[in-house]
Amino acid sequence: MTTESPRWFTSSYSNNGGNCVEVAANLAGSFGVVPVRDSKNPTGPVLNIPTTVFAGVVAGVKAGEMGNV
Image (cartoon, rainbow, N blue to C red; front, side):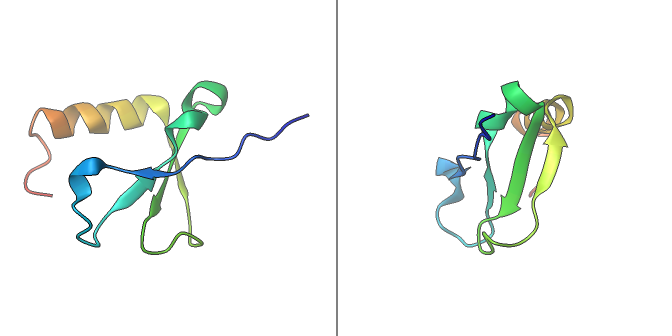
């Protein structure tokens, strides 16, 4: 059995300001989660967010429903 490793990336909108998160969207299809971590602490904790919840967050951000975050 092969274990798929997360492929982490940071948004191109982050501007290297230091307050960024990284996501590993490559696990969404196979595991149904989108892992999220603090880009400043790559060995720290990871939140595994269900794909449906993550999609809702992304839609809210795009619609401007998250305020000034």
